[in-house]
Length: 463
Ligand SMILES: [Zn+2]
Image (cartoon, rainbow, N blue to C red; front, side, top):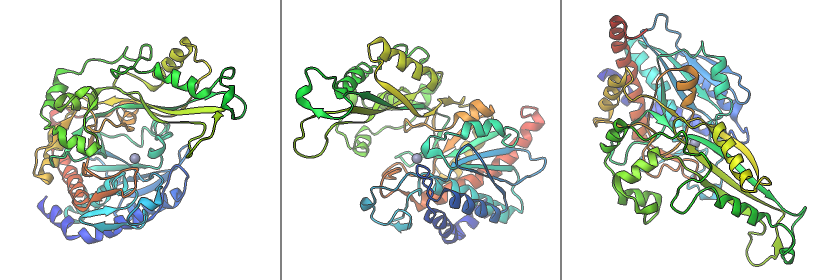
């Protein structure tokens, strides 16, 4: 194993150069810009490291699929990542151009550096390094890199369901998320789901003089009143039946979270706030962040929002609403409940458009490969990993396509740093060390999973 790690270290510059080529290629899923070119570039990069690569059609942007086609493999690892990125705007806020990667003070700055090119590219390089040293990668490696994560992985579930055979695996691995601020790597076993929708209230056909307010419906008021029924000031979500399926957090999960060091002051500084809601601190803040469902107004607009006065009664008001869901809730169920809740309160006029969803997903933390995973991660970081039953960020992702659609366990490992990585924002970055560690970590995992799974097969545990 040490030879593999040394090989990776020796090729640092070369690996970074190749990552830069990938980062230079635009691949904005929201507009489609550069998507096809990026898929082709990635497919070529997979071929180059010795994977059989294909661009597979979906209902939208293609999936790039790589496979080493190892016969009679003791273990099949399915790796997930996404090659699409968020739009780079506002451009003037970038210190160096978003598609012209640059290293400053140990960090690689570019759109997609952390989310997610700089993370999934580590797998290609890990594969290449193991192959170079060992002669052959001892497990079957399948790489599923999609092009629609940033627009909600809209076609991923149907793609996975259509290609179950192709995607058969023992374990799914995603590299996304953070290294904990303490420097300890995080291993996560689940994610919240998401229901993202846009609410619209309509008033007169066109904006009117606001003197008409006594006799004409003001959609901004309609929307504000409707929104105010969704959550109270104690943060309790009031949508009828919202908590019906929410189960108490298990003792085991709380125990795991108890092992996580929490620096409340540091967390507040990172988020740029002086206090947390309800005055929570420490473990309680972390527990809420990791396990609680949410109902958040992500954007709200109506009427005149420029400087100075403009006396109008707006024709329309809109809000973006994101609801983070926890295990056993589902986006369809919550959407139905939201509709019924608004109807019951006389807000049938407020339209709801569903813009994107992820289903919540959670694995038991004691999957059969847990020890190997912890060992591989610990060996690279020389630190004991922290185990999170759900994503530490409170975020969502397409974990459910593995656990629900394919019925296999999954695990998420980060290589991006916790602080200031600015995903979706200007000056997105990943540390060079994070990228290198990610490469070493995947290489270690490819090696250890092979050894252990053979034993498990012999013991008859692993079929
Ligand atoms: Zn993202």
